[in-house]
Image 1 (cartoon, one colour):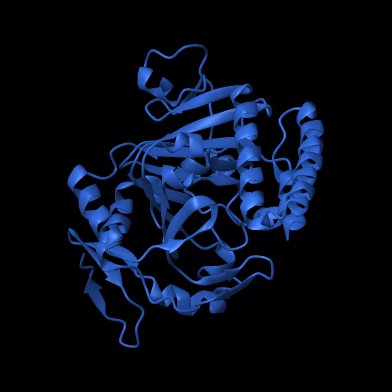
Image 2 (cartoon, rainbow, N blue to C red):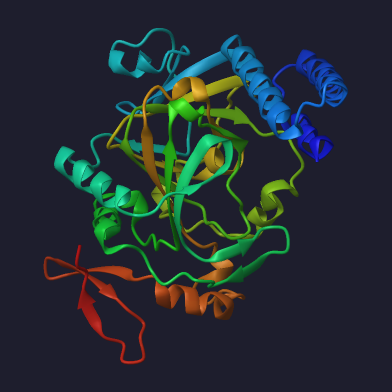
Length: 352
């Protein structure tokens, strides 16, 4: 069991050749610690989390010493630096600004009273323990990413108390036509050392736009270039998809020359909305380090389906039952409605 988990060390993205040698050293050190654990009858379940925590901290320190940039939501540019408060200097940034396509951040997406009511509603729902000290509330279909199997499972829709958030997506041009198929509440508590390791959201089933609404607590999303195999995260599926973005937005996702040995820091203040798409979605891993969680953080993550599971897609039938469970937001005569694909095909107002 321990050996299987320790293999994850090899998945830590490397920015410099020296880090590859460091990873080898870390693996040998970890094996040595496990041997010590056996010698002194220390429980694997107690020892392994400490090892992983140490490795994550070491990775964080290495990234801090790397060339880094901070994204500014006001000018949609990167400025040199590591401190996330760099964006608050706008428009008086230090150094030359560069482009970083595939990121959209809307500050104050939620009003203060909306965020307060939403937090009360979320805390009235049961939380479940998740990985790396997080807790979650998951509303969506069951997905087997390795076998690429999709099932409705026990999913029967989203909580009414949170549906107003999806209605507000209509305010964002980039999210026009976004049909939520999964909503996941995530809680990061610094007392539990909550974090999430570098990763790319699965590309077989989750679509081009990855949406996060930060309800409570300020934090940072750290982006590092992905250099692994194309088969990981089902990235090999991406070339088969056509972008669903409008043409002018798609044109803005064209890759620009960015040094691959850099780290990008994206601000995630409370009540903000973030969308990752294009190169930021597919070519960079994102993570949240425990060092960037200084108070309780709660966010809502939203996912849409990939084109093969949408209308006229080759797997449309597999997703049809799931899509019937997810209301499609419509804007008619100044009111938002959800078109529920029931036997009677009734259009009914969305109630919060």
